[in-house]
Length: 233
Image (tube, one colour):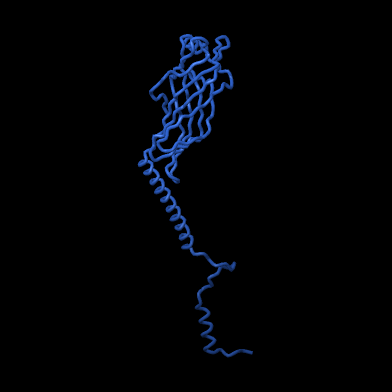
């Protein structure tokens, strides 16, 4: 049987032919527009730019704050150095003794507190450490000055070169020996609750003249010194 070809049938065929192609792939998934990827990349770049800008601004603010505060390093002075049980053996080329030191520490900052996290001290002769110790953490408030006492016990015999030992023996016979005290310090500078800076320092206190007893030569104490005898670097 044949159906009659009418004008409505022709219109239907013409409408179907003029429809746009289907917006789906053959797999059935919608296509992604290239503009979507460009927009995502642009958003990521803007986010990175904002984060970098915030970091630069924050770093500039911190730098300006430290420039205004002008932090100063702590000041150190060996106020006392006592030696006991001091023994020098030229035959065995060793030297040993017990050392007691008193260190004066000053915070010269008016707006910054100081916190000493690590603090090591050693008594040295001609670059050879004779005794050393670690000091517990401590703090200094603004413009505060305090004294720190430490006992350095010999944990082993320290060997010296023949020339150094001869030089030390000659000084001891004359009644005095010049020692050095070296300190390794890790200091945190803190202004308020949010601004802090950490710095490691090497403090050298050189040519500390210890006067020994004329009788035994085994005990001695630091000669009176008025000037600051320590330099921090």
